[in-house]
Image (cartoon, rainbow, N blue to C red; front, side):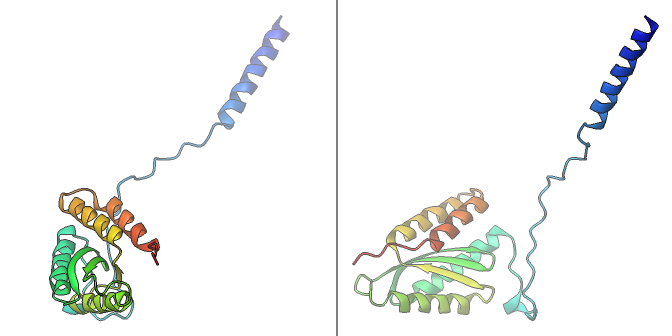
Length: 170
């Protein structure tokens, strides 16, 4: 009887030690607080008012977009323009004169890019679209930003919209 009790106790102890030894290691939970957004200047970029690092403040981006809209609308070929700025990137949708569509679109897009970079020295990338569907969608997303909706998801949608090629009708 003592022998049987000893084996049961030994087997129980063995099972418990195996269970404890094979349990996953407990680690502290990862820190879920988001890191603050910081933008660093490109290497070799001199500091100065024309080359300062873009601010992460959406209100500053909105002011920059308004300034770009005003200057691009001054171009005679452009009827209407919508601009969304996110840091050093500008997304521009242009509505141009119907007579110019097709043959001068690429030339006008390059003029808009040049004007945008001339007006805002902080821009490193400028995306321009003259596609009516893209421009309409950009206008809707710009209104969402003005209404205070989360900008990160909206910017992802805009970025995807401008990276997709627009269909060409011949």
